[in-house]
Length: 257
Image (cartoon, rainbow, N blue to C red; front, side):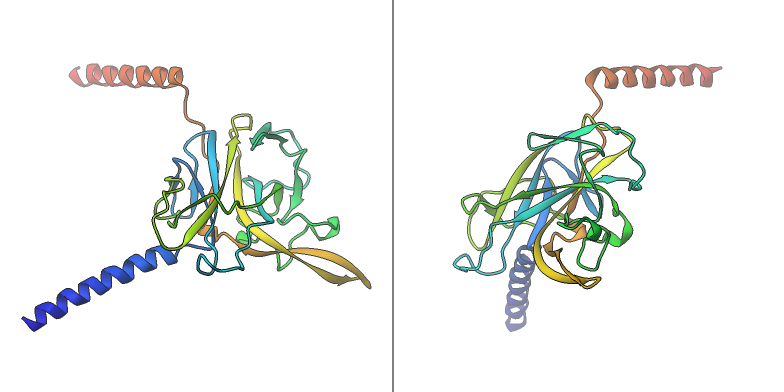
């Protein structure tokens, strides 16, 4: 009887610990896409028009006076990577109402966007992605989180695409939403999104002091996001379906012979 009680108590404690880990393991910063899917590394949209969510969990309790809601950034980078001389027009995408021509309206290098152009090449304080996405052409968008817009905490890599959840209790997760449309872009390319904040410091270069901008906190590369292939139009699906039916019929005829 005593051993059964101990087993039940151990199970209860394990469940509580697992629940705590699933909530508090969620990164301080993370991205999500409404209706998106997770490919094991990145959250991918299921169409060319979607809502991108940026989340900030904070690092203290809800009464922590050090919550920082201001000056966060999303970089939107062309992938596969372009070279600095790859300047052929690739169409455009829309980010929260702003139309970005690719790549003519973008900057080349590694995020964050530097004040001094000579520093736009990669340094140790920039986003790296182990060379998977940068350097390439990218745009950077600054925004502030709103203390009145928050969700129950969830891990976007485990519950991808669900969007902000009704807050019940515990720690809050603040969010900002952005409307994105990549239907005007070449279908050979996608837009990759990263989330971060920045810090500014002075750097000595060739005897001069210049301003260097580096990334402070950022969404882990396992919690970043990317546009996916466009969803086929209904007419395209109808034609595809007709073609498959035709092939199936042809196969049956051939088999009967």
